[in-house]
Amino acid sequence: MPTASTSFEGEPMDLLYAEPWHGGSHRRWIEGYRQHSRLKIGVLGLAPRHWKWRMAGAAGQLARQAVQEGLRPKAILASDMLHLPAFLGHCWSLDPRLLLAESGFPGHGPSGAQQRIPVHLFFHENQLTHPVSPKDRGPREDRMPAWLNVDSCRVADRIWFNSAYHLQAFYGALPDYLKQLPEQGGFTAGALGVLQAKSGVLPLGMDWPQRLESRDRCKPSSGNGSKVPQGSRCWNTANPILLWNHRWTFDKNPGLWARTLIDLSLRHAFRVVLLGPAGSDPQLLQWRGRLAEALGPRLLHEGAVSPQAYADWLYRADILPVCSRHDFFGQSVVEALHAGLLPLLPDALAYPEHLPPQHPAWWRYAPGGFAEALEALLLRWPQAVAQQAQVYPTLKAHLEARYSWPLLAPQYDARFGTGA
Image 1 (spheres, rainbow, N blue to C red):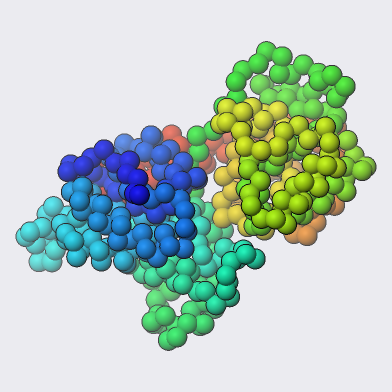
Image 2 (spheres, helix red, strand yellow):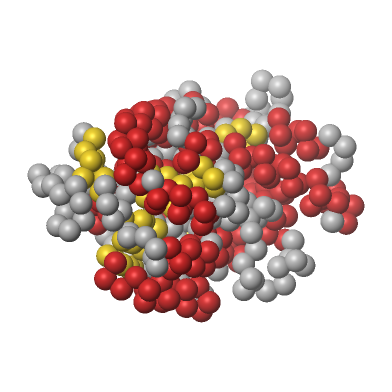
């Protein structure tokens, strides 16, 4: 059943967000924006399931709901999960007034043509460069999810990506993709330039997880050495805590993560926290079980947690070792960086965008060097944690200036607003 969080039924609204996958990070993003925006924002969404069907079939459902509720937005913002041409076509067929500015209906605008309200497309991810799950049926033959993304770009007035890496990856892969399609998907010479000209970057806004205050947070841990404080943040100088706070899915490379930690646990003293559900992939579940068996009591927590417990673990843990194959933005990584975890990141994907211009070189490693980089960090941990305490204030200020909702929301408003 559709889920609607709009409260402007029958009333003018500044922006209507249409989302076939109204859950997880998509939902947190739009709720964060609504909370900090000066615009009146309505949301139409569907439950987050059957992702391929949502991309192909949600357009008619959401258009019908918008018309039934008598919505009259001044602009539309669509998620990448929506086939935008189909949505606009259904809206026009059911009630063209939903798409027309008040000055353009039922009369005509200054140029003599009816004026359509502006339509924006926001890419949380894209199906053109997202890695294909080994479990996906016919992954090489199924080009339709990617085509729905490309087709949506053609009708949007503006296209937004959540990172510069995401924008570059999409347009870098698009020419070869079009060559595989009959008649290149109908793209003519210069069409790609038109899409790129109306594209830009709007990073995700963040409401930072906040831990509960604890007066003994920075006291030495029994048997684990002293702690180094920086303001309200502390790090263990011995037996550090390594954190996993991503999905346990193939694109985050949990098999490599588990294999590496199992091997290093034979030579180094550290503890581990695994946050989040285990997923359903049998092979990846086996690696999770092997890791838990190898660590024993050194595995401090495994599984889903409440938002407050999640924030507390962010501030208790010390190292964020990341070996993901894919991240268009990496919200969980940014949250951990802001909380002060020492990062170990691939020098790839969107991760370099999150770091200040001046940062320790060992925060990043060359692709393929995860195990070696993590062992090198563990070998020099006392020195590394002392340096982390010094640079953390700069990193935190850098992230807040780039991603805090109170600073980003006015930028969103300027792009999506209509002078309201």
